[in-house]
Image (cartoon, rainbow, N blue to C red):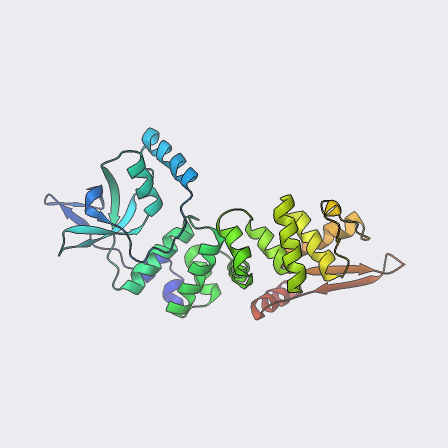
Length: 293
């Protein structure tokens, strides 16, 4: 399995032979919308109405830039959508009666699901929570590692690991990321907070004051150090004892390593300690590899 996945998507899901239409072979078909059935295994749950409307306007003006993916059902003489539901919905909104489609033939429902997930993940059509659930489902159903999955979807192992960690957040926090109220960066910053009560408190303040990722990271470090500000008026500008240079170094290390980093200096600013936290074996492996370079 590892070797096959390394060759990319087509090594996992075979492409169908060129479809026949009117006696002529065609790699891309033009299909009437009424012949296309929804994907019963659709991994995507949320479709932003505003963005859908924007895409419909673009399709009206410029047409559909990328064909959808379908599979053919000879028994009903219809096509089941595999990937591209957002494009299909927008095409309907735009008043199109037909769309271009590429036909693929998954060998099973498992393969159909993989194709739908991977196509969406490669196109970055999923929100961070949908991506995390997609990664997890592919890893479980195909028994593959984060490294192998990264080769298929074109992501680094650390990027996949960071996205998967969003599933450790409580449901209420996950929903804000799913619906675009907070970003994946906010989610990673909230995960830095070790105490669940402090995490909820910081989350409420971030939502109420629409704080940036950087401000959320600062609050997370403050919460872990037991110096979280209780006065909401001071949240936007937390009083930090660390210098701006030290905070900048912490942030750079945190982004590079994908985990929490604490730098503490002594009275003599030329001496101190650097603490690098890890929250999973994947985090630990990545830190070790970076340090050994």
